[in-house]
Image (cartoon, rainbow, N blue to C red):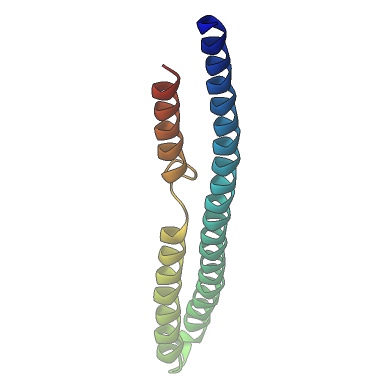
Length: 126
């Protein structure tokens, strides 16, 4: 009689552990999706900033070439100053875009949570 109760209790504990593991896995997948979407938005913003920076850099280089072409007249200084300002702006935009890109996707919170959950699951089953 006591053996049957013990087996039923053990089976019940395993069922609970399996149910909790399923729920935990589902929640982890949801959290990973949210984190991935957040990092994707950061990457998008960084890519846009880099693209705008590249466009501004192209304009700056073009104006520098115009300044060289106009060097035979006195208007070259204005074109050179504007080209230099545009190149500096392009460098700032490109740097800002580069810093906005995620460095190590999905290695932050998700990995730590999964390791903690695995440790707790091992303790509970043991």
